[in-house]
Length: 388
Image 1 (cartoon, rainbow, N blue to C red):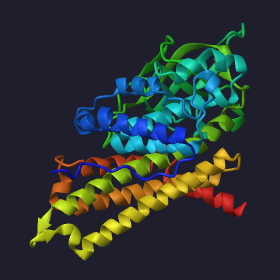
Image 2: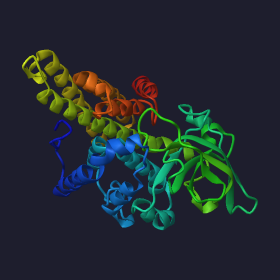
Image 3: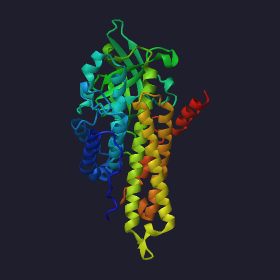
Image 4: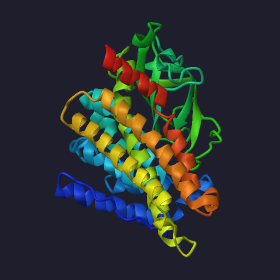
């Protein structure tokens, strides 16, 4: 059956360079990611080499400055790269989004000396990052985090103790962008440390046993008297909560793009299957009930893509985009859940089996409604913006 074949999305891109970048991304997705995605996800294999390939191809630092080895691409382009990768394998698309999120604090709030020293290696392909905000008892209530960093008497180091939870790339990352408590002054007592993964006292727990995205390790990260040089403080003490929230605005757009990638993959597969599967002497795509279902799926994908790109263009123009990022994350991930569920329905009993990837798409879509702020939190953000 050829239903797994996907046709390229017709994209409006701002430059010839962007078009070449998307063509490169599709080539990597088709040849390096998609063919083994189902098998490796079932075996919970983390595609570390794929991230090195992305880095060597210039795809791990797309939104960052060229002087540090980045691609200097607008978010409008970067997010469409994420979408293409997520359509081939969500573990990689979301992994790129998380890596970009992990670099955000340094790239945006770090000193020039810090950026020159660490950023090129972080976006060059040999290092992979993780973003450490959530804790076992502080998920949506991020300001309640308890992981503590105490500065030594000499002032040269911080001693870090605590546990981070639900960390994508936990245990396999090369560095952790870590929110820590440096005082008891609520959100104003939070700071950011850029912690190398090989720091003594830093370790990853066993990965969580997840419903989907099994190839992407999600684990607790443990800090046990980990001594981190004070030069790895990003920004000033007490700035950490604002830095974290600024990163999440951009990260939510990455999740929205991932959602549309998964939804597009599910739609493509469902359409291909419906054109080939015959019942009552004709293709099931010819039945009005099913064609209407496909039409609604396609409309949801186009609407979600338009919404996240509109938010990205606001970001690129230097306009506020927190509300729009929350809207995009909310709508796109809810739409992906509906589209993938409907794709399973199109395939009927076959859709519920692992012989076809739509059951994996449905399991993967669910987590996107939860990560980087649940969709209930997104509604809270949007509502507060409208009424304050």
